[in-house]
Amino acid sequence: MTSPLDTLMARAEQLLARIETVLPQPLSAPPDWSVAVAWRYRKRSSGHATLEPVRHVSGMALHELKEIEVQKEKIERNTRQFVTGRTANNVLLTGARGTGKSSLIKACLNAFAAQGLRLIEVDKADLVDLPDIVDVVCNRPEKFIIFCDDLSFEDGEPGYKALKSILDGSVAAATPNVLIYATSNRRHLLPEYMSENLSYQHTADGEVHPGEGVEEKISLSERFGLWVSFYPFSQEEYLAIVAQWLSALGLDAAAIAAARPEALIWALERGSRSGRVAYQFARDYAGRTDAQTTSPAGIADVAGLAESSTI
Image (tube, rainbow, N blue to C red; front, side, top):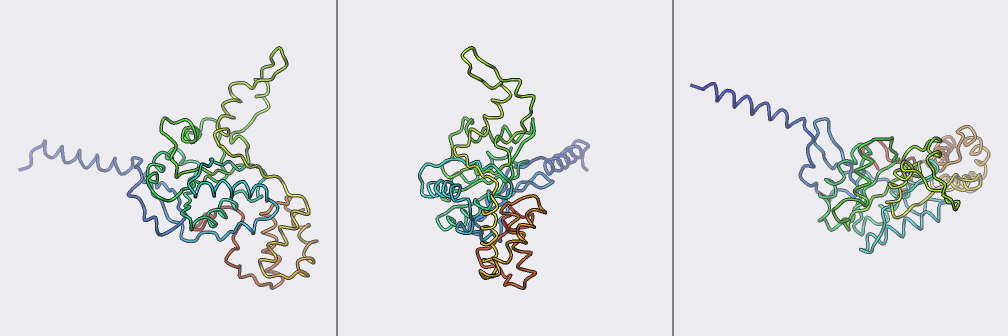
């Protein structure tokens, strides 16, 4: 006959088992790294975290990215140093939207994947788990870019301090096979307010020093060793990008020239001359003119990481 104490212990064990299923869990067993070159870090509602392989990686190539040659050279050089075992920096890509920031990172992955480069996409909300991710990959022979797309923080968000610590503030030494590449439309990743100008201090010799709040905001972006800025495209740069995508989609030189007026109207209606807008126009125009719309292997969406299983 079961005693009351045995019954109580059994019920307590059942209760603990249920509680454990809803508590945040560390990464499960390391994945099979041979099945993909890109991964997504995902945390389920149960609290369990996994690294999911991206089965279909964007085929973006470096030569397809036009009018950002200076930025391309910096990112490509830094990534080459990284995969060849030389010193390299964490990278912050900031500036105008739709100018190729995330596309450049994807193109670098394709360029160096054969040399052991791998990418892990991490959402802003999951940055608090960066130490766990680093622990999983730190002893691997591959080189890992932890990719944070469209990164920005509001005051007090927990991921801010986690990222700041992992970049250059933790007592743990930097892991030589991990770098962080982040894109943002904000140069310092945090909102900046007019009232903060009042915190600046003026010294007797005329120097200006920012207040503590401003210093705190600058301190995160400064921990990225390499800053790469992107700027809005001029009209001719925009048209050059349109021509690149129309050519890739199968249009000849005459058709591309004929498309220029419509490309300008398209940009005017959208209020932007970005690379993303150029690509969207090219897809629309090529489809309407019965061009060869079966994209070559190198064609991919420049609009950033899709929400589906494709990077």
